[in-house]
Length: 228
Image (cartoon, rainbow, N blue to C red):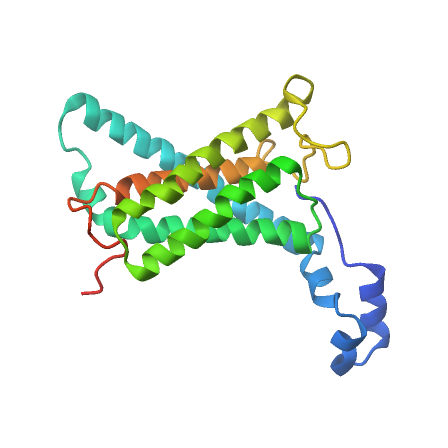
């Protein structure tokens, strides 16, 4: 399960000795400390882990579907893909934004210190989230989706490397500092899901959705679904 951070002693003192109207003035960190308590952090970690497992199964299923279509030459699953296509880019944006907000929660509220590889993955996820939101909102050309797709492919590779460093620190090590080692695991949900595992699942989901979105007949078709 997740790492129990708990509400700090200062927060408990503030709650016990300060009037409700002056809580925030007396202790500005009260809300962040409350949000970082073990129950909230572990609940979010469990939620993200379940989404990661479900998303990974979806990615595998889509890969099998694509392989079957490629080898058999038939149009199996075409109805499903046609229904998914107009929603694919918005779904990719939701995944990217959720991953970005989740990483900010872990570092800024739960106080999980990001390592060097974490920052590199953020460098690919955050621009992907911003670009996808802009493209979906502006209903831009589908061709522009290649930019966040490329970022996500590289980010996925970094996430896999990071997970390997956690699993085999003596064999893969050397990318991070001793103060914040890349091999550290802030949580180990279900016995195998760590932060880079969540990142890898998010990157894989984004790439999968964008592959579906880019299969639109016209290159200049809008990113988001037509409201009519």
